[in-house]
Image (cartoon, rainbow, N blue to C red; front, side):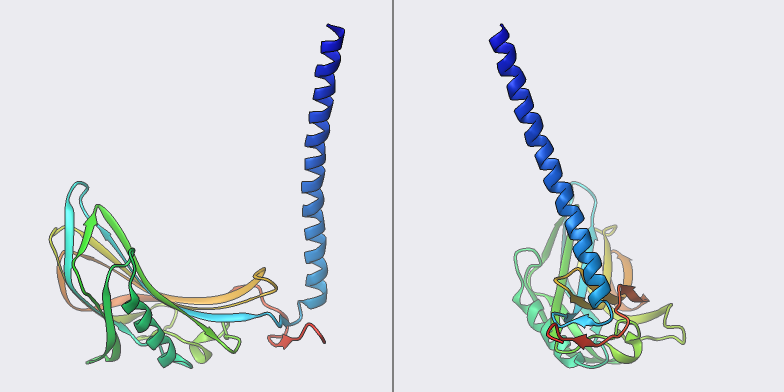
Length: 251
């Protein structure tokens, strides 16, 4: 029995030491990372790092909600969304159109092109095949466009891409959107969320600043007409260096 007790006690000691060593390694790593980040903050926080990457995202999201147990079909979808204004607006719009046309198993098959409307040049989005919904379905059509310059996320209305604003108050305005579709269930709800955002990311993705602008609209049943979608913009999100310029790591 004494030998068995000794063996059990020895195993217990070994397990305890292994667990203790694991905790020491975990907490030691966290402390080291915290110290390293603090040092980096104090040394490099005046400027953007030379690894900064800036990109725009332009997306249209459709969330369809139907009665459980009822298979709902949406067809003849035609949506006109605004062309963003500002530097690179044409390139971003063309990138969105190209990405929408590619389609995939999640979004289905879509077509997209520029169209002239009473509200100016817009982007048309049209389904190629009927969209089938069982209770709920979320479809996101989007594009990411990387720039070769830092995006001004503090003052995007003047210096970055934005959706057209139809109001004297940019913090609470609207955008014109045309929506047409046939839906088999009269009570089915479709939420539209149109968004443009700009983001700067650097220091191996641990630093980021951004702005976002989105407009949203909720419709029930089949539709055909122009709608005013509420438009909201949020700027200056994230962490900024004191000087919004790039300093090379070699300097």
